[in-house]
Length: 622
Image 1 (cartoon, rainbow, N blue to C red):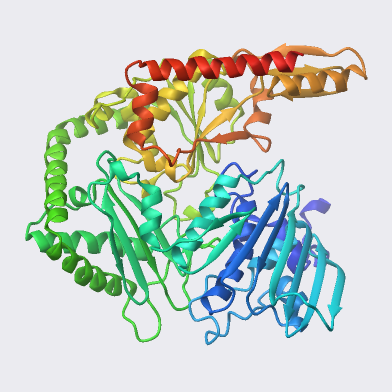
Image 2: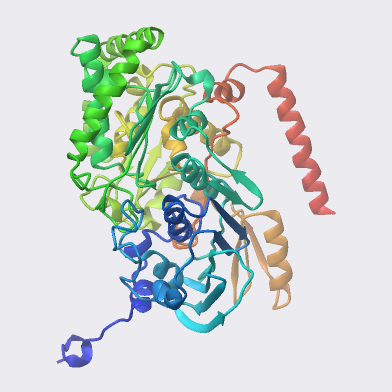
């Protein structure tokens, strides 16, 4: 018998805590990534540490949390009670060890399973924890989960609290970097949910006075709000909502015990149901649920005793009970919304009139589109059968194991050669390809009708499964993959316009990216370097010139890159630039400026930026 097929006692081994985490990091922190996505592992590591500091604040201690990220090193300092000094090592290196099992101390905690900081420790090249309390302190240092140093001080002048420093391991998180925009968004969510908390990040202070109302104020521009934000609070629940003037689909921000449940769960489903029921009863009309919820922008936060999530990263609530003597999650939310929202609507006639007009408008549009929708869906089904546009992958976010498919990606390409290269080199399990035919239509100022009448838009919407809401989005990452030339840039702009016009929450929630592909290949007989900029080309030339004569190839388009090479650019070393919104401007302002009629202001903008670009090129050449 072949040695590899034998099954003996020698095949049985037990992994210690750090080995298991490092071997199966996805079980603990979801996907790895390089920091280009908000749900990449390096942000989960940061979140796990901050969650412990938040729990201290919730328990009434430590009103300030200080966070510093310089390069790859992260420092989180709170002024809570501090970890009991004799347990400093245990709480960061022994599984199922923590204070949150005692529900008397942490009744509505974010983390309950004693894994968080252990995962951070195991997945960090360097990890240090310091605790100060009762005038004494203790500290411990680790490398990849292995204890390297311990310190004890019988006297210290340090303020009480805990300080955690770590550097994510580059052998696990390849070519990573923290993006301040993602960190800032995470920190804002913490302060929205914890009035009175101050978070200082690299010197910038975050604080919220009005909780979820502040969240919506930041999420939807004042010019786009149909009516003033409705803000309602209870003992263990808080909601905020308005409707967008221009947005078509629904947008929700949901939280449980301070945890951002990006994939919703039982609380979000109950809330959507409760809003519909309350509004129907208020107007005494059996409106379609989709007409009521169309264009809604809302947030909900609840607190649950010992919540059950559907994954370690806690992005979807599975609990059906509030805990204690409280009713179910569904009943609790329904009763609160029915009481508070109904009272608000009775007292605010101007809002109810605007809301009713919006619902009736949605009803008219739905009826006008009903015939077109049916034809469009039939066309989409026929197109999928013939597999003309979409080369699908084997897993989607609609799977039962939704939380495990965070790597699911759709590349949107233009042209047969480009889509052919990506299709041949992709990971068929997680990467799909949608091929455009020519340039998409400029959809600025068009109605939703165009999405169904235009074949490209209709099939793209069907591929993404986003007609009604983001909840059933089939791919976590939507990547625009076009040539780095004028035509490619134009296609990018037209696609971004389409998403901003009809599905802006897809961008708001961080699902849209631009694929960066190399401009040059520099190689000699022993080494090949792919360069994404002129500076990288120069550096590669200097490096390889020392070892012989290098050869330079300029890639003009994606189709020129062979599948054997392309696999490097969409695999572990993929470079993605996230598409982010400027919070200072409304979507209408952005689209009007960039995609509307030519104006002197836009011409001036182009000329000024072209001058800056030319000056940069001249400086680089010099």
